[in-house]
Image 1 (tube, each protein chain N blue to C red):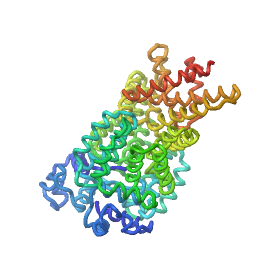
Image 2 (image 1 turned 60 degrees about the vertical axis):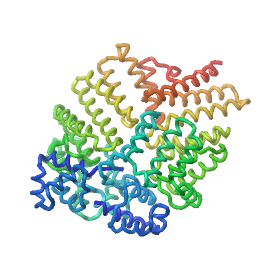
Image 3 (image 1 turned 120 degrees about the vertical axis):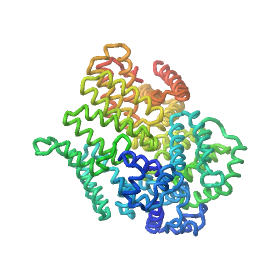
Image 4 (image 1 turned 90 degrees about the vertical axis):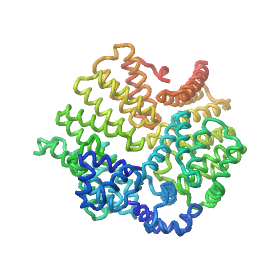
Length: 316
Length: 316
């Protein structure tokens, strides 16, 4: 469930576009006063539906996008929508396309509905193209198109309130920047997104998820750019933070990056780091067993035995 | 935007052929409910949540636009859950106090949500006293008996109501046999009404844990094993590691008891089963180790002792 404190979101959206309250009232043809907007943004007055509609269209902020696009009689389609995104990120593109076809049948034929379909198609296409240059396309401009479809092109991304879907699109852009070798630009974007979610206008569950994912991306880029120590430090801090809030979803991925970074630089010759690697692999092993990923668990077990000399008995 | 809650309620209620009387039974009057459906009034967020829950709509299907205070309260509710899941009871208690300060004490629905959390937070730490139940029953009026009645008569209950009643049963001062019988009713209701629904997976794992605990205390170890495995199916499927450690520990406890009672096993078989018990304890131990907190450390230490005991048996 996504919850939004409407007053906070409206204020952040306005500020990220560098509009004053006066600008907003003018652009909305004075349909409400500056004082009303001030009270709405402070949460003193509850905004009327009309006001929210006006503001959301001005900020290009799709409030309640899914409600209007999905045929609500077939609400199970919402689950399919989530599964499409999951399949894409697991690189199961055939499955994603199949589900998209199914999804398309049940989306209302509104402009917003068409937007969501178009966006999902572009996302799938992005992951399907193996080599952009060969196909005569530019990965950056293609994915920028995705970004502009999702939110206001002038928005300051470190403040602009982003939904789950929009955050996913940002991840695709980061992926494009990585593929294009623009590591510094990717780092800059990740840092802006971290600043954004650190404002904690999302609930803790969404915050934890993206905090883990963004830090995993950042650590991966640092590792790629030979900044192994920084990568390891980021992983340590990120794990500490997400574990404190009771989120385990990204711990496996972060531990994996840590071990890889340590191994690439042969840091594990140092006693402490080697111990950290063994502990990380042990935790990864347990997470695999807990999540019924037997095959991965076996691989970790072998790795511990062959590369770290940890016997089965010690593991148990 | 709020009118959308009314539209969702109306369309889905009609699709599911649920009458207005059924959906608002025990929560509000039919007239008040009708006003929500036609967009004349909104109803407080907790009421909206309970009504939406009674339609068994996946949580992700609805975005609630909340006031600043409501948003804080909904997020606090989630934070309390997460802290309990990682055994940080002190933090959970502090957040629960904040939650109590924020709710409207006149609202029975808000009090129901508060007591659901109260039972969860304190029930995990200590045995609740009769006086606490007396106060609770007084504050909630006839709500408890109404929910209980609906449960037995298989009438519609929201996930919140269902999780309240399971916490209530799990902590009630009744004999173990009676508790198990009641928890079985909740499990049966869950399978009957919520099977396959996304909205109750965490709750289902927790419920299986409560039931398995009861079966363990009644020395019905085989039932305990089965219930633990049922809970673990859900946690594995959704990558929810938080309930996993306790379920693995209880599973190993029960399997250990079964093993102790077996006298005619051949040595090889016995060794392999002891290894299985040790492996299950190890998974639990490593997951406790990920969450470094006072309580998690204590739990880890307890499991370590159990592992040591079983390992000694293995060497013998």
